[in-house]
Image (cartoon, rainbow over all chains, first blue to last red):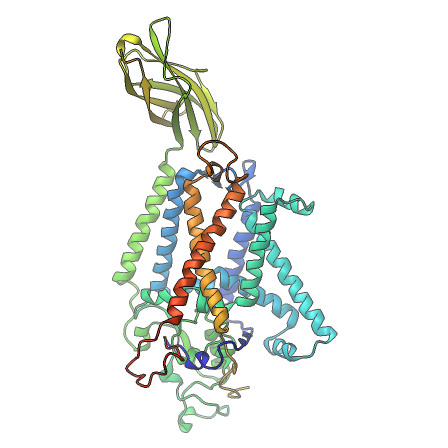
Length: 460
Length: 110
């Protein structure tokens, strides 16, 4: 990894030169375009999918419930999210060890949205050279019009992105209605503008600068690299010494390598680096230089792959190994975590019970010789459909449970509080005892939960 | 078309130092604040934040609580990042073996 000294020299406050990546087509750029469409498609479409009368994916923050299709997660299920984040991190490690910075080049939101903004820029301002010419040109009517049109596209797209983002937290059809009638709440307005603004600034202006100094992954990914990790690399032994030559001239006769020094690899690079200087942490592995170089190699009639995906071992002519201790460890851990998560989610208890003592009186002595305690029993139904529950209790001989029953109805994803009176014969108890209160779904007895409570009786 | 210019970009490809500083402080603290907000409000209902006894609670709606929480965390983590950055930026560089005539830190080496 090298840091070009020249970039650190010079004035600390000199303006940065904008990077104009040249448009390029090729195998890997097709793949990246597909990845961008799929990922953005998922992001923009998901909030619009309905599911049994509600939004399929809705992180309902005001109600503190996350709906993901048939699954409803409560704050108590927070550990699933943690688990999911660990899986995501480990996947990143695994794919990094295997194929380098796949994430950066194909799936990172920063890359994907920057690409989209670049497409819009090209659509309005034309090719790379046209854009550079336009930037230098005086402010004619044409330039104003083009710049305004670009800003219009960017801002509209960014606002739509902000709207979609908030649509994950507020039902999106309602939100659309609120926006259409200019009656969104203060926080909805704020977050639409916040996320829209972040998209606009990140994808329109900051672009590769985010990868260069803001991204932690760009710095620590090298820790997951080894000599068998796929990287994008320039074959120096084949390419050097580089130099221009006339078509049809045998490079060996002029003492030249295969690199014709056309600088196409630099022109297409979205971070503006020269891959021929070796592996650099600024490289996001988008493979644009591979496509560009292959195109040039085809034109001059040399074999492809002067710049290619390869491993360090591959470059040295040693055998490549995909299966190695590092990948085995990552893969095993990943498989275990995914299987564990799947098992826990499918087997999690979707019923819960919470027992709160009535605060007004410790106990009441009844004329029939029994002691009564009053509780507020909260029944939690996290299941996707409604259930009827029965409440029972154990712990003291002769204990009786009395509530407005026999069945308590709790809707899907609801909590129902029920006042419950529990009576114990006076003779059975002095002072108090721990009791257990259970609930059980009538239609599905395996849905049950038990909670502990304290029963208080007179001490004499 | 071939071999015309070897250095495609003659100017600087990086932000000025000040811009880098803002980015280095704002972005990591944003990430940390996002995680902190998630963890915090998974365990804490903003409607239950406030005085021990009786209303008014600190936040009128949960959304206000989440937003205030997020920006609070962002502020705190930014301050921490800012101090770290200040300490890193103002430290004297270690003299390196290849750099015998070290110029007192005017040039940063990574």
